[in-house]
Length: 264
Length: 296
Image (cartoon, rainbow over the protein chains, first blue to last red):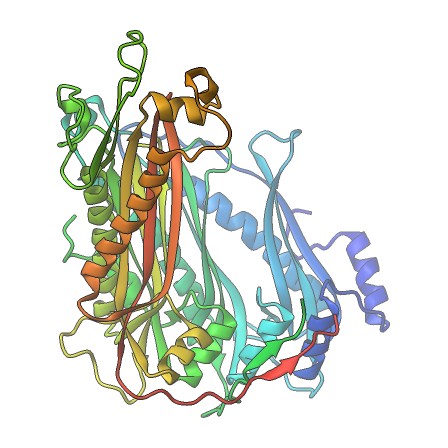
């Protein structure tokens, strides 16, 4: 499985079964009803996976810097997993994938290797219109069924799950710096600047992906930070959100009804 | 890093075409319904070196009891037993750690100012759905303040008179209901207060359940600790009240924590945050709510 367009035999067999009408989905009952209500039908549970070996990159003790090799590895691995999930969805003739989850797992048997998994439910529009994105691929989104229903009411449609990552090494403080600020409450500009730069890089890359899809915006942005297995001074900043485009003109949203729940 | 200079990476991101927003989908939808257009996710950071031994700290004084540390609230307690031994805690003290509060205010204030600077750079009228976090980085002495929110423009609205966007922790229907009630958000209001408890003998015995040794019996209030908890809350409220300038505080969240630093030595901290709001119109009556029962 060297190329992302080579799906495993078992996946092809499973997808063939789905093409004959049976569908699988990890949507809850409420989500399923709302996805149907908004005019989409679930086709099947789709996933993509990549086990990736992350290389080694030298870090300078006293210098904050992006670790480009590790950034590239984290990016490529997720892209591979996402691409394979999109291929499964394409195989089913889907317009999109909702409820996408993107996880990273580490196993004891693989030092410096991690499994990146993308999974979600492929859906197809019942009105026969295509909702595929500018690249001709099914849209992907981490929206739940409820969120998918709500965003469609606003006149926006999802275009793709977009992400940006940046692996950054935060410099250690030297003895001189530590002694210089001993006993004082002071800002540490080097730390501030490094964390600022790293998060901004991740977010800029996420926005670049949205621009490639001709999206108007990104909703539900999450900023995740993990050190994985690199130690506390090396952090991956991951920005993740759903790129959306406005397809309808002015939409009048229904006024919410105030309720009192009589449940316990 | 100065407050008025955005990092180059931030300027590049904010100049990009697509808007980004940290709002949930329901909040995003409510935001559009209110006529608020998201223009970008904005944020501010500040990493602070956090000194427990700063100016005014008792460690730089001659360990003199009955002093007020760095000014502010202080109360002293004297042992009722007379001299017992060298280990006996013959005095105790509660005191406000003003240098810790000042460090928190500086860290939060710098991060907040940078968030507002980013919002100004996007041409925003306001920032909604603000989330703030303070976390320890490598050790307890280094703390990062991170404030994040979604900058918005009021459709058919005019920019704030002073050019500084309004800010609020609220978003979605909570913000819509606030506006329907006739209030507009003005700014975040937040403060942290810190009180150190240096236990005297009675507090120490009560906290360890050994009060019977010195004639105590049954359930008893630990006066020194109770007063520290009351004081720390009052101090946080007083600080926030000082920021309101006659406006009201909406959605106040008050959290307290305590940390033991050693035997008979603990810190009680309180953080109070909320949105400063101002009345701008009369209350719009809300329709009577509909009673509902979930079927699940």
